[in-house]
Image (tube, rainbow, N blue to C red; front, side):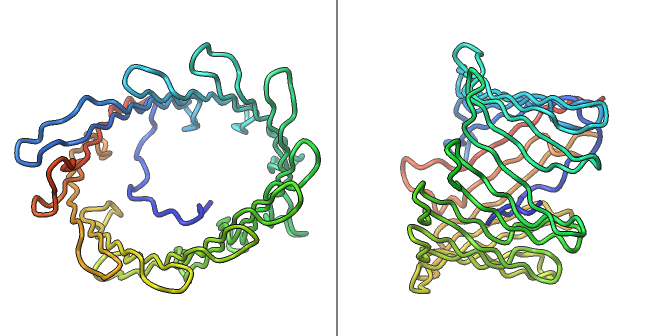
Length: 292
C-alpha cells in the first residue's frame, strides 16, 4: 500500500528473516569517522511466514516502544499490542476483523480495561476493491477518512482528511501518481482544508534520480532534494537545495552486504565543505540479520 508522501530509500529485504536488529549512530567527523554511541536501536522478530511478530525500540539503554502481533494459522493478523515500556502493561490493543473471504473489514483500538477509543471501518466497492477507511472516535464522531484507488490491484492512498470532533477539517493530504504508480505530487492541507504546502517528485529513469521539490501555499519553492539511486533501487547520493535553489548539503551513501545480499552497514556521509563547526558529518546504520 502506498504511503502518503513517502519515498522508500531501501530495496525490499531478501530472504526469510528471523530477526533484524538495527543500530544508528551519528558520525562526528568525516575525516576520522569518529562515531557517537549507538544510541538508537531497534529489534524486529519475524515468524517463518515473514510476518513481523515483535518490534522493540531503545534510546540508549531505555526501551521506548514495544509492539507484538498475533496471527491465525492462515497468516491473518488478529491482534497487535503496544506495551508501556516502563512496566510492560498494555497501552493499546488493536483487534482485526475479517470477512469469510479473509479480507480485512475493520479494526478496533482499545486502551486498558477494554475501553474502546477508536474503530476503523473498511469500505469496499461492489467488485471488492478498497475504497475507504473511516475512523471513528469512541463517541461516534469521524476522526479521519482515508481514500484509496485499488483498481489495478495495488492499493494506493489518494487522499486523507482528519477532523475535529465538531466535523471541521484538522489536516489532510492528496496524492497523485504517474502511469507507473509512482508518487508525483502530494498536497498538504491544514485547518479548514487550507493548502499549506506541496511536494512534487520528478523521476528520470535514465539518470535513476528522483527530484523532489517542496513549495509553500503560494507556489514558491521552499526546498529541493535530488536523490540518485543504484539499479537495485538503493540510494547512493543525495543533494539538498535551498529556497534559492543553491546547494546546501551533499551526501553519499556507501554499503556493506551479507552473503544473502542485504546491506548490513549503511553510511550516509556529508560533503566536508558543507559541514559547519559543531554539526555532525553523517549517520551510520548497522543491521544484524538472522535467517530461518
